[in-house]
Length: 76
Image (cartoon, rainbow, N blue to C red):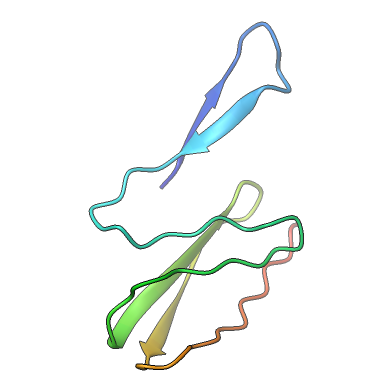
């Protein structure tokens, strides 16, 4: 779970930090798209995090070719 770091002088200045035990992660662009490169084929769990929703996970099958997952997250 990411941890929120914030500035006590500037409340708009904050970041979420997470530490992973693997090299597979991605960050969304301004349109909400992301990519994760180099994931080996097989089944894995894809987790997304949104500050207002929390963590959402889905089982995914990765193939040797490009795998596309539609993962819609709607903030409350």
